[in-house]
Amino acid sequence: MWQDQNIQAKYSRESAPRLMMQKDMFPVNDAFKQYLIAYDRDVELPILYQDLVNYSYAKSLKDKKGKWTLWENAVYEPRALAILKVALIKTYLALKKNAFPAGAGQLDIECIDFCDYGNSMPFRVTVINKDNGQLDFFYVKQADASRIYGLELEHLLSEHPINFLHHEHTLVEAHIAGTPGDVFLQLQPLETWEMQALAKAFVHFNENCFVRLLGDMRSYNFVVVPSPGREPAYLIRAIDFDQQCYEGRKSFYFPRFYKENEAYVQLVLQHLSALEIEQTREAGFDQMAVKIITYRRRLMELLNSMVNDDISENFKIQMLRNELNEHFETTRFSGCKTMGAILKQQLKQVLRKHVQLAGIRERG
Image 1 (cartoon, rainbow, N blue to C red):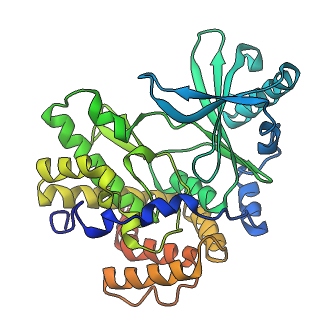
Image 2: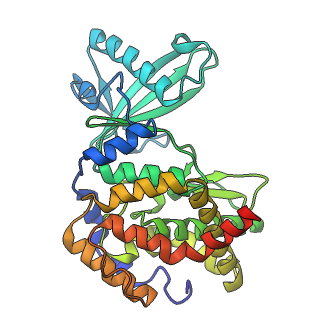
């Protein structure tokens, strides 16, 4: 299948994916808020998004190579900055579950940066540990229900626990460490075994995104993380969840169909046989099945909230259910009225037999 539908598929050249940056923001409704409260995701925060927007001016930032980035350094009046720092450190500690025995005294806020590109218009907060000089980051964003569903699905269905908090119109996210996918392959030549491991990681990532309907996974929206001592020896992690269950085109949920990911697709085609690709896909499905069993009650509560939520547009819902019916040669998606209903059916369609086998192994 990878050989038949590779990166040259015509829809990878369309301009439509660029329009995905303009998606609507969807509010967190009461039912979803109750879910978030039940699982300690919605808590009163020391700072809200609106508290950060009144900076005096901003300075454009360059990267390490001297190129201009999409980020600007937000500059605040000294008195306002002092108040913000206290609130931001408290927020960071809440996000990290107060994982610092010495408390806030060893922490300081080094800088606050702003990006007006994309949907959530994030603030990136750099935290420094004064005891050892180590830096960490977190993000304060405008809350968007589809993005928060994506974060929670990442936590429940992937191998990657993720920290985030929500309150009112604010979303706070922990930084996801790793090398951006569009940078990783440029850093240094890889040995053959590394290319094979990275190819397997991309196959796994591709299938994971499609099963859970996470879109727009271009190379700058995921990171590569070395994972020694496991198979494969690399992980690929999503870092942008804006396009969770939003787009109508099936192809938007396959990372391999984006021209920005062509180098990763070529790694798969050059270093993995058809059998290895299929074995990697099945292993990924097995891992997701175990996660479903582990979080079965919580996942069902989340999906029930999604089924009754409005996180996309009607024409996109109709388009996606038709394309998935065609993809799986079924009519099971025809009755789906929302993106949440489509996702619920998608998980059943792909993972039913894997969940059954995992359940047998668990009991046995």
